[in-house]
Each structure stands twice: as structure tokens, then as C-alpha cells.
Image (cartoon, rainbow, N blue to C red; front, side, top):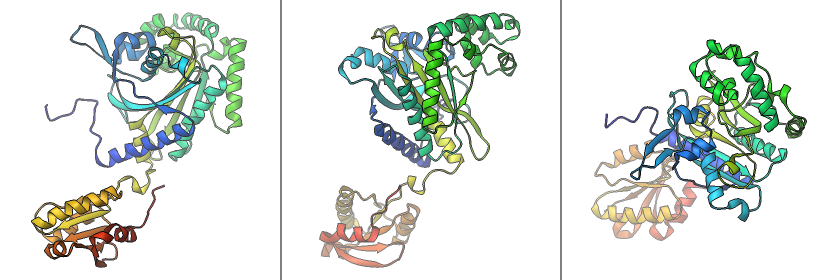
Amino acid sequence: MLTNNVKGTHDIIGEESNGFAYIENLLRQICELFAYNEVRPPVIEHSELFVRGVGDGSDIVRKEMYTFKDKADRSITLRPEFTAGIMRMIVQNKLLATNELPYKVYYNGPVFRYERPQLGRYRQFNQFGVEAVGNNSPEIDVEVITLAYTILSSLNLANVKVLINTLGDDDSRNAYKDALKGYFAKHLDHMCPDCHSRFELNPLRILDCKVPEDQEIVKDAPKMKDYLSDAAKSRFAKVLELLDALDIPYEVDDTLVRGLDYYAETVFEFHYTSKTGNDYGAIGAGGHYDKLVKELGGPDAAGVGFSFGVERLYSVLKDDDLFPHCINTPVEVYIMPLGEKAKVMAAQVASELRLSAYRTDVCFEDVKLGNMFKRAERKGAKVAVIIGEDEVAKEEVVIKNLATTEQKSCPLDKLIETISEEIGNEVCE
């Protein structure tokens, strides 16, 4: 067992690691274009943060958290999501009082949920997302949706389905919860045990049940739109109007509630089916919240955010062959020293090349020159630098272009200039 990874985790290596880096770098760049700045909250938090922030009626708190006691007998939890931790960070550091509002941040890192591993979903997975806190307008809701949609478009994902709904304001939700309780009370005996708990804690959660028999019952449940206050209707209409103005396609889904109890007003998901037919469901989601900051001891401030699972994005891009050719970064220069003295010079040459931003590798093993060329080919090298005893004595190297097979001697003081001429300045878009 010591040599096996824990169920629900996986090693990110090779091409997959390069793919993750490509996705995360692109997401960072787009977030920064929208004037969001990176934050890095800790991986562990006090368990009570998630009970109060995420909600004890959510599946995450009830069934999925990795919780343990530390040496001081305090209950600690590996973060199952970022938003509660970021709100704690905002409150603790008084960031809403010391920054222009909305306070706009993005994040990236591992989260932990004990759930059934499935397509593109693990018990430890990486989440990338944003939060915009301190503004309660429908415009900031739409900005966040636009940011997420821009990310998916920039990843060349076509036909992304944007599902959107409103959970209304407090009056709307309270009236709707009463209506749901009245409806589901007549069907509860035929529903799953989880729905029995959801009925008591938060009947909105029943709408998110994945049991097929329960989904049939949910189809005839009351709809949120019939219980919205005039203010909630007006706000949601403004959100849809803005999305129309920005040409962002969407579909209103009356059953969309999201899995976290802190959401209010606008909620949304991004669904995708790959070209190979794999239905990934929601590859990203988020929504508006208006009580979370205050619940955690801060001011009365609203916010909105979304998150993507990086593993799911990687699976989708891999499925549809959407990665650019250059995510697997090849070695540009492969240095081949012949003899012990040549190895010393090879290390010096490699250092100079790396400081000039050329991806460089050196063969320090005692193998034949033919084998070195085979290694260079496998690594995708463009240029070989050969160093023998004569080259050491003359303070020069032999540079061979592996595409044209042409080679020439080069004095050390002309090394960078000559390598630049051979390799050129290729750019990966």
C-alpha cells in the first residue's frame, strides 16, 4: 500500500502537468485582464468556518469534509472549497475597509472532498476561481459570468451551455421553501434518506438530488419564479438583459440551486459535452451571496464568484484535442560532453544558456555519441552542442542543427549569438 496513491487522488506528471500549467497560466492572465488579483489562503481552516459558511444543510458539510483533531484537540478541516476561507481572510484582515470595492481576487489550489471518484473528479482536486466582494449590483454578477465565459471561450470550448437561475431575496426564498415543504411532504416516504435530511435542513437542496426517482418527483415541484418578489424579479431581469447585451448565450433553469447554502439571487453553471460524447455536466459554476461575510463576523457585504475544476478542464481539452502543440515544452539545446574535462565545460555552457532563457539539458552519463543523439531526438532538441577534448583546448564548441544536420564550430564568446541564429524566436500562442 505504501507504493499506491490514496483512492481518489492521482499523480499529475508529464503531459498532464504541462496541460495543467497551460490552463492555469491562461486563467491567471484572463483574471488579471479583468483586474482581479491572486490570493493564497491556507489549505486548513477551523471546521466551524465551513459549518457556518457553507451550511450544515449542504452535502459537503454533512458527508464530504476531511476533518480531524489537531494536537490541541481543535477540529480542523482540509478545505472543501475556497469561498468560505476567502471570506474569513477578508474579515480577519479588514480588507473591505482598506481596499477599493468590489474587492476582486482569484485563487488556485487543491481542495478535498470525500465523494465518489468519477470522470474528471477526484477526492483531492484543483480548483481555480474568483470572488468579487463588496458590491451588490447585477452588473458585477454579469461581470463574473462574463469572466468565466471568456475563460471557456479562450480555451476554445465551443457550444458551452450556460444555465442560470435566481434564488431570489430572503422573502422570495422563505416563501419558496414553504411551498417546497408543502409539496415534498406528500412524497417524502418515496424519496431517498438524504432528501429526508434536506427536507428538514433546507428543502432547496432536494432540487439538486441526483437519484433518478427523486428527480421525477422534483419535475412537478413548485418553481422559484412563481415566488419571486418584485425586487428579485427586477434584479434577475437586469442580469438577463446585460447577458443579452454582451451576446452571452444562456438558458434559464428553474431547478438550478447549486450545492452550497450561502447562495442567493443569481446562480449559474457551465455545462459541456465533449466531441467524443462524454457529458461532463457542470465544468464550472458559481453564484451570488449576500449573507456570508456578515455570518463570519464581517460587515453586511454581498459578493459573487465562480470556480472551475482544473482536472475537469484538462479532461475536456484532452478529449477534444484542444491543447496547442507547444504545451509539452521540448529541450532547445542538448549538450554532449565527451570526457571528464568536457563535462566541466558542459556545465559552464549550460549555465550560460539557461541564464539566456534557453531550455537546456546535459548528458553527464558516459554513453556513446550516437546514443546521445538519440536522447536529443527523444527530447525534441533543436540544437546539439558537442564538446570534446579539442573543443576544451580551443575554448569552443561544435553546434549541430538537428533539423538540417548542419554543424559548425563556435567560439565560446559567440555561443549565445550562434544559438539564437540556429533556434530563432518561436512563439507559442
